[in-house]
Image (cartoon, rainbow, N blue to C red; front, side):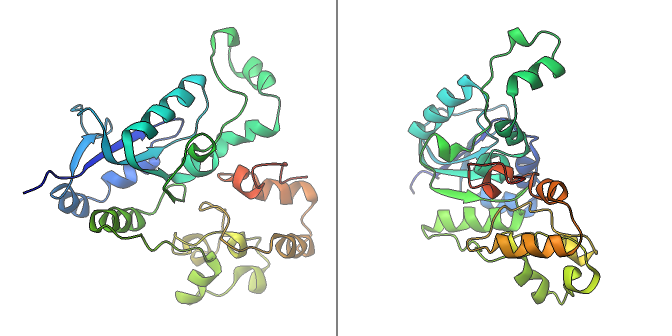
Length: 255
């Protein structure tokens, strides 16, 4: 019998929510654990096995010089590298620093900022190394994670959605809250994966899963203006978990 494939889970700048989503898989994780060898996962175990690794899951954004060196080491040790969550795929909410004066932030927040070693930007793993697959969300959807790990074990490509949250609203029979109630919602431009949870409870989509594969953002912005939202308010709608992705990695989306 061959050796079981190895899985490593790595943390960068993040809240650990995506790693907790993996632990929340419970019975599914136990079934997967019977087919793989968890070689590195500090959130779950102190036991560590040296690489190389068949699959590495990377949570969190690259925010320090040390992070840059570490993501390169992980890439070298990993046959497949999967970025999980908004931080690892789009820099996370901490990427708001990319559109501001990072030195000013440091001077306001820290008593002795000269002791910090940090970058002026927060960037996804793909900005530094080749990434084989991305799981979006803040946090990721645990069903997508289980399906992805199962697909990788079977040697096939995971089936991940590229369509918008609006498709999920239709599938669960949720009336469009923007059309019916005038509630601002990012569902038309946000990647599916959450099951349209917020609209189902009368709240607009926050864009947790980042931009869908194909979007018409100008049309949505026009609709938000029709709801009497100011340009500042529209900017704030986009400046959340996936600010860098909605900005296309460039200009501040609020401008």
